[in-house]
Length: 174
Image 1 (spheres, rainbow, N blue to C red):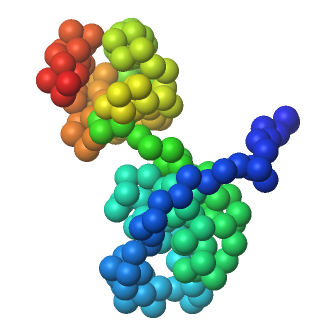
Image 2 (cartoon, rainbow, N blue to C red; image 1 turned 120 degrees about the horizontal axis):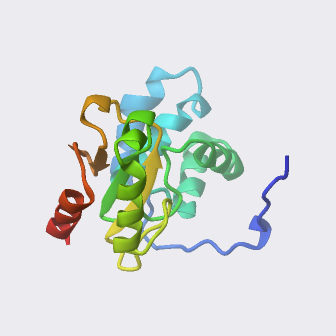
């Protein structure tokens, strides 16, 4: 197995003056999250989720701030955040499109639908449009096999999709 390596030792972290873990977020974490765990480090996942919920993604500066808050290293938080698909280490679009690629969806036209979306938005799964409006992802199953093909746009499930009706859904978002 080949390992993909990037030179993070010389990576420049984009910084902003205001902290991502502001006093309000820290207070909430100290009172509602940290007491539920045997150690600060054990609260890693809920802390990362809280940061992402507040900012829609987890910037590297936020990882450093969370590491300090949890009394651990930023590299451990980066390892954790990059391991789970739930965490975003890059900004995502205002509209997150999660296209189901289950067997049911594939049998009922998911591949043609995905090709149509890729062509319309001019992006591949895992990418965000240049204007920051749409991010396209594929997921294993959305649990709506009886209404395949389906997709989530943000938190709204769209079922019985065709290239035509999904194109209209996207046009309504633009």
